[in-house]
Image 1 (cartoon, rainbow, N blue to C red):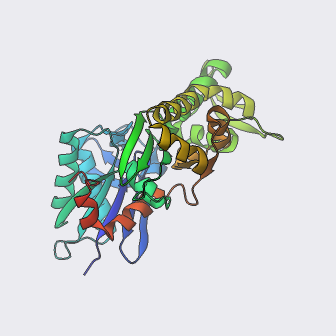
Image 2 (spheres, rainbow, N blue to C red):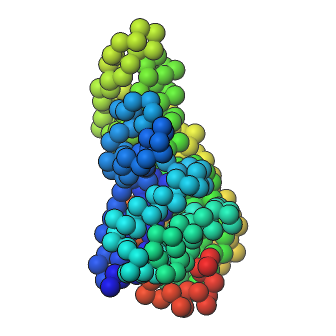
Image 3 (tube, helix red, strand yellow):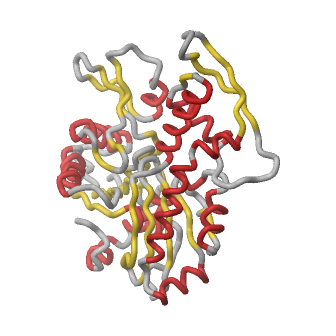
Length: 333
């Protein structure tokens, strides 16, 4: 019989954790559809590879945008496919714990539950991502000690100060890695008159993106399409240029951290000052983001060991203590 599953339903990536087996699926949260007949052509990494490389009637869709479900039907189809790939069948009927952004609505929560049940789960439990991230980071959330977790995802950034099994103060903004990609595309279009795609913008962010100056910063040669001539074009970009391009998004993330900390009681703030801030999520891996937050808060910042997997690992650990978490109110359902 298939073991219980935990799912990190992220804007950028979806991860599945199977009890006793660890992470069994890690795919982009993308689904490719044929708009003419509604047929699902691919999901995950296969669909991601299609972005910008298909006929007009084939579209790669991200059903979650900025931490919210933008298309209920596509989201349900995606969850069904994810569970099927993880081995869920009508006869296996595992219990499923799904991590969701803290800002989703009651309607969206029901949509996630219904998708899991229709895919074959015998029960669906929901858990907010910041709490799962704190568990995955190994923070002592059940103790009377203040802990701060910053989860920077593709579409949202969630900051939570946790103590005694609950969230004491929090701040969630709909800004993340995709906003940095959009800012890079806008910058290159404005400054160089060149159009680049979503995939290229992400590659530039990974190669040159940073939130804080450092010695020996790289440059990179980028190819795109000249807007005026319509022909291929090549430019050389610097890390300083890209840092300036994404400053708006980075600044909002730093402000969210400060706002969350300002809402915490003095004793909790003292604990965070002593223990530091824990940074996780794919966006948390941006070079220098830890140094930038530390410089603006005067608090040490540590990147978790597996930033991309922290939420899924935390949800997996929560599977081992579902009854206790339900009693403590840490599960939404």
